[in-house]
Length: 188
Image: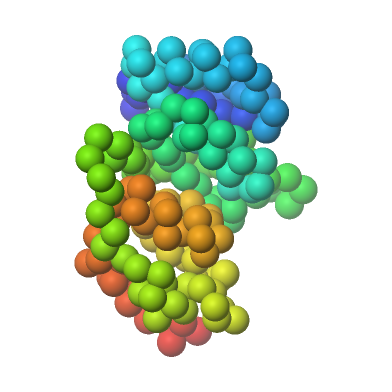
């Protein structure tokens, strides 16, 4: 599998894992304190070939993703769940620990935010409350599972609403995912 876009990762180990799974070029941010020089390289890469942001499913990874998205709207996003990024010894979390198959699958499910036209809000905060994704004791676990099903990553309640709009998740996609989560919870 060959990737046209340049993949933005956090470090050298992530680059090694990506290149083990697919044929692709990467830009490393070297942590969550992204330098101006790195942001300019990402901007240039976005203009020339496109960019896929593929950061770890933790706070620093989400912070990097937010900084890049704010600075360079329209970059693509690939996500992996925490479960797929845990080191075999259990002492580490990151893309570098994911299997080649999981990396390829995440890259097949890349999202491109829509930036040209006004974004349509199909799913409201009320819908999130009704689906027990915010303001409910099980909300966090349900958001984690929703992020996995829709391939939009881990979010808090406020970020979830923004990400559903950003990636133009339809009400039908949302409803099907919620039905799957409800079914899984009933079968436990």
